[in-house]
Structure formats: C-alpha cells, structure tokens
Length: 178
Image (cartoon, rainbow, N blue to C red; front, side, top):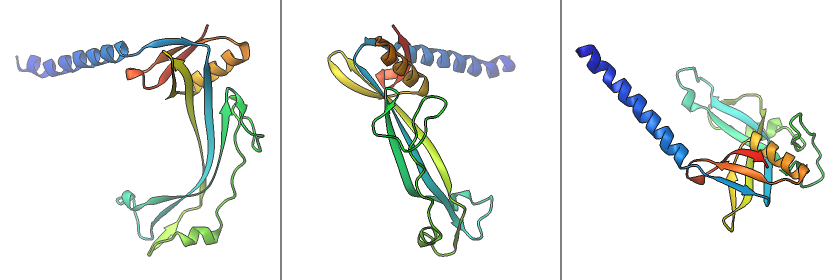
C-alpha cells in the first residue's frame, strides 16, 4: 500500500506534464503567407573573463565577463544587407569581419583591484527572426535556423510559407514551403 502511495505522485506528474503539453500545443497556430522576410543577424564579439587573483572553483560567481569590440551583419532572406567584409558559412549565412582584438592596454583598463584577466576569446552568435503579415498586421517573431533556411528557399522559389507558431504565437517554430 505504501509503495502504491509513493508512485501515485509520479503518475500525477506524468498526467500533468501530458496535459501541459496538450495545452501548449493547442495554443499554437498556423498561418500561410506570401509576404515575409527572414532575418539573421550574425555577430562577433570579443570577450574577456576577469576574476580575483585568488579565485578558485568554489567561487565561480566572483568572475565577470567584459565585452570589447563587436561587429554585426544583417542577412535578409539569404542575402547580406550591405557588402559583406566577412565570409559565407556552410549554411549560407554571411558573417561580418572579425573585429580588432582588444589590446593589452584595453584589457588592463578594465581591471579592478586584485583581479587578473584571461586571454580574450571571440564569441560568435546569431539571432533569427521572421517578419510576416498575420491577419492584416505585420508581426516580427524570433525563430530558428531551420525556419530561416526554409524562408530563404521559399524566397528563391517565389513560394508562400506555412508557418507554425509557438505557444501564444510568441515564435515561429516551423516553416513549410507551399
């Protein structure tokens, strides 16, 4: 009897999780559009980690990141919006030129008392969004690389897209070429 009591919460948790998933899926919607733009903003940023000279594994919160030079490039439907100085990657996305690495003087200027800095590293990031017409309004939502790629292909073929929107229509989760 006690063992059955202990497994009941697990069963309820599974039921609650399934119900939550069903509600989340029910709140998703689809839309078909011919008027869309897919945007990928690619960014390189130099970052250096600063930490107290006596920091150890037990005090990771004492560390901080400082950002230095950054370069970004906007890709719209697979094409850069300005003449790119960087390169195109294997996914067809253009990247900006890598910004200048921070100098020793720049790194030292951000030191606080008793700190040391680590060798700066380049951070590579990309943000995807879709802008489209939804019921007479222009909407811009975050998305992912797969949706961006489908939008580029739809643009090249001059085809509409069927978009699957996420919970509360807060993102574009999937795109199908029509």
